[in-house]
Length: 247
Image (cartoon, rainbow, N blue to C red):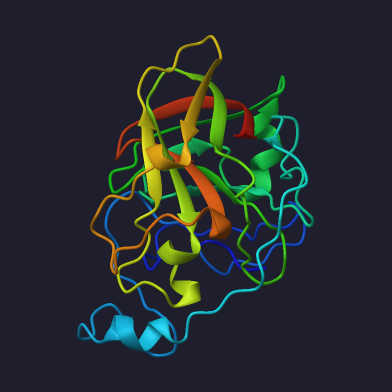
């Protein structure tokens, strides 16, 4: 299946099917600005007319709808209440001296213990690393319609900040909507502690960085995936205990 993708070649991820049988077709974007190709042969380096050309090419499968608010309970790599559900994967900027756990998507089962998904890493000098998932596990990259919910909550613990990015149809090049892609709707959490804490955000509290093009309003009907990464090229160590939509 297709994953959230990026134009940098550093992070390579296995597809978001079950952790067996993977197809590496793309990557989730780092936090920093990326130039990216868009529909057909148009690229972000083309003239400003590129966004007009690609807008007409924009297409996506119909959005799936979740059947309940719980996204993950920290006990498996499969996304809950979505049919078919996506899976978690690992990513990093491929710095030679960098190390992280899980070391790769094939090792993701080792990250799940005690009702939480644990990731840690250090030594990465470009954008860092972390973990992420697509909501829907279909063969084609498919959005999710979460319009029945008002926001999202994360039960987290750890010793470092975490950057959370919510990808949508408008921020990914596969759909042909963007000429500067990967400017996901994001937030940073800076006060993690060893004791799990719930952090809740309304959709309006997640913001793009502002460098993406064209500018797009957040569309809760076409969310695609989430990533949890280091805050820049710094060490990270955190656990994800639960993720849920809020009503």
